[in-house]
Image 1 (cartoon, one colour):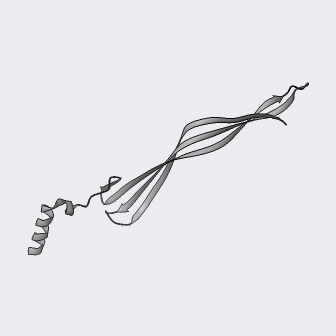
Image 2 (cartoon, one colour; image 1 turned 120 degrees about the vertical axis):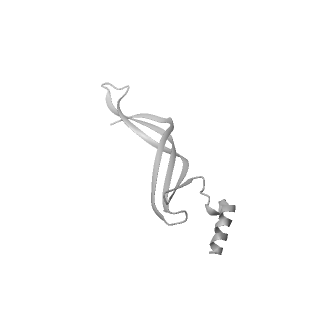
Image 3 (cartoon, rainbow, N blue to C red; image 1 turned 135 degrees about the vertical axis):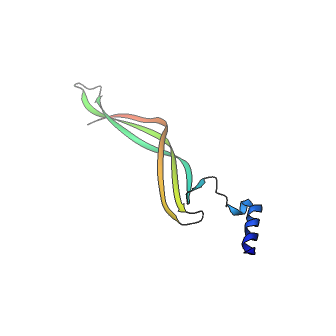
Length: 115
């Protein structure tokens, strides 16, 4: 009994020890610690668009295929959320989402070739 009173008095005197701190990217509510981790990266992708064109200067005109090449740069944001039992328990669930935002698109080439 006396030891329990001493322990309680000690925890009241030092509240930091009574409740462990939660990292800035985590919250603790209803027995679950939820942590969110966010990373960003730049990603460059080349894409081609095909349309029709006329190859010339021939008579009669000949049909062709225009290939337009673009270089697109995206900002990719990955968010991972983990859920764990208590403050130091095992992770029981996690989700990861990825968001891509087009930052720039650059014309690389445009070619009209006969079919």
